[in-house]
Image 1 (spheres, rainbow, N blue to C red):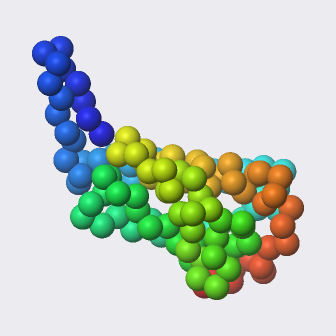
Image 2: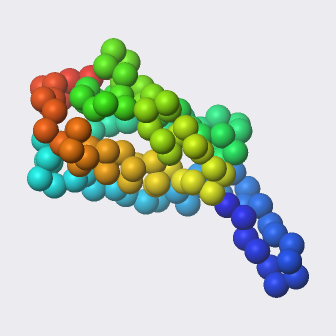
Length: 120
């Protein structure tokens, strides 16, 4: 995140402040899909290069989605455009919002899901 000033210069917000700000946000899952009413656990891992490089994203809860590797729960960046085309201005909230949209997409919204409460 970069903040501009009237003098034309900009200030880069430190990584720790950005992480804290992003972690305060919450995402609610999509309605009218096989995912409705389910709570999924996932991990977004930000290494020292975040936000210049995207975090790795891995579901802990078992889920059947076209962008998730079935054996590991890892969100495949090649199949998830936001990670494949990462920009420094993107946030973890945007990743979660896009995953929610993916759950509601026609190719994912009715896929048979593993039993609730199962994990990778």
